[in-house]
Length: 356
Image (cartoon, rainbow, N blue to C red):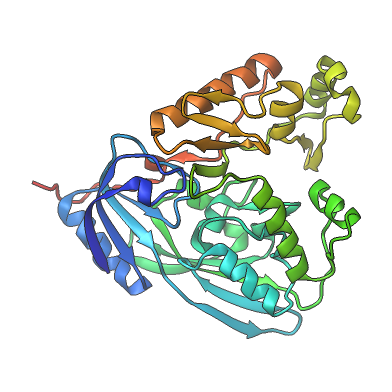
């Protein structure tokens, strides 16, 4: 375990904004967690766990607690009768795992290629893209419980998975150390998503996990700014989930705007429909490329919020609030952020001492 003081949060998050963290502890094995928690308790400080900081808005005021930077490695494969099991350390970069699965011609994770972040963050957010969600291939999640000082493995059906959500997002005392996935040696392409349909029509090979993964990465690359020049957390908001009645009313209200496209795209979810917020921002509200000060919506994908090099967390929040209000005023839909404030993930031991 390494300890650093007064570390810029802009170095730890992909939005590249925020003040400094009081302490940053880098963890390279589960065995280091008890010592890290003892460090926080002795000083009476709260902690947050970060992977690559790709879904976090760090405050300009900084974080007066401890950031546990998860860098636990490891990728173990084992064979079962009808599937392959992968046990992956929480600090492994997500796309590194996706590429490793593709190198073994294993199906299940290919549509999630190119997503930034670590394996340990994937179940927290229940990451999803191109018609796939990670919970469908998770077998179990191993955690260290900061409340009782015990490690345990939580099976998938106890993880509370839903759209971009899980129990881990709301129980920050559960520190994820590894995730077990179930992948299939035999599978078939899932290419019924618009971008993949277009890629296939353009002649792209989508016959293997590796080929699909590379195509997904190409599609994603076109929807993101140059990360060397800008900060971004990718898709900043969740896609709205509506009742059929609300969807029909929205379609009627904007029938002129959507006429060239036939209809507002929808994806069925149990009892409701999910619609792409990017379509609302672009086709209904004309906000593609909308700028507010040093922040803007990316021209190639209006769901992606981008921060110039000199932007602050307050600037990012101001743009997000502006978008939230415009969407609500125009559609009556209250959109929800996918990106969370750093302190949302905070855990504080109420029995800890206080730093003097």
